[in-house]
Amino acid sequence: MHITQFIRLSLYQPQKSATIGIVICDITRPVPNRLILTELLAMLPRSGIPAERVLILVAPGLHRPSKADEIVEMVGPDIARQYRIEDHHGQVLEEHTHLGDSPRGVPIWIDSRYLQADLKITVGLIEPHLMAGFSGGRKLICPGIAALETVKVWHGPDFLEHPKADCGILDGNPVHEENTWIARRAGCDFIVNVVMDDQRRPLKFVAGDMEAADRTFATAARTVAVDLGNNRINCNTMEPRAAIGSYDAASDIYTLHVTSQDPHNLQALLSQEVFDLPLEKFRVISP
Image (cartoon, rainbow, N blue to C red; front, side):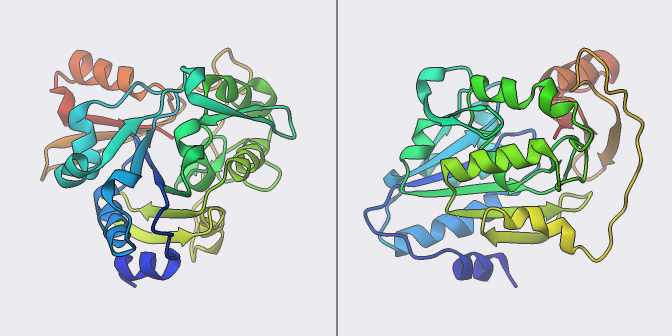
């Protein structure tokens, strides 16, 4: 089924007076936002919802803010020009609303702009994640648009040092269970998630229920498991452990997939100090 048909069948007709909040990943995630948003946004005017009632909120977690050219690269020039696109600022507590604590005691601070939207939509990527099992779904909300006060507890040793806080594990994984609970508390009406191949081509779209993203890999016809030794006793549980690199001759761009949560500094270091390449020719993608 084409993405247009899939979205139209999955998304209910919003009320004409509704405000729409759409959360997307930042530049470190290779989500085909332009493809997805073009189809998604085209439905709203037909429902009587003008562009000024739509906010596209970039979810960098605690990464640096997006640059103007990165916004255009992520969504395309037409969407960048026609719609209001703003970054989440995880370290500005005043821009968040407190929703209480999660069952394991994580204080829930979520971007107020998202919570104020009548219809909440997230657009993301499903791939193995080094501590949450798989990305996608709930991760757009926590840590994507959560405050530092939330992330520093959810990323703390009580969660990350748990033996089931690992790649490909959902059942019994406290990292997955807690941010799923937090995402439910914040609310999410509709998701569009995508599974990509190693050439960044969409393999499968998941639309509708937020937690459907978590079930996508469980229904895969074939899975590959790799055992990696990982020293859990260290001062930085997010430090790089492995990397996979590729080169696209057509675009002359190098891509490195890493397990670091500091992709921007790593990109600058490797491109300029190691490979002597322009920054735009070396991309670093992290979970």
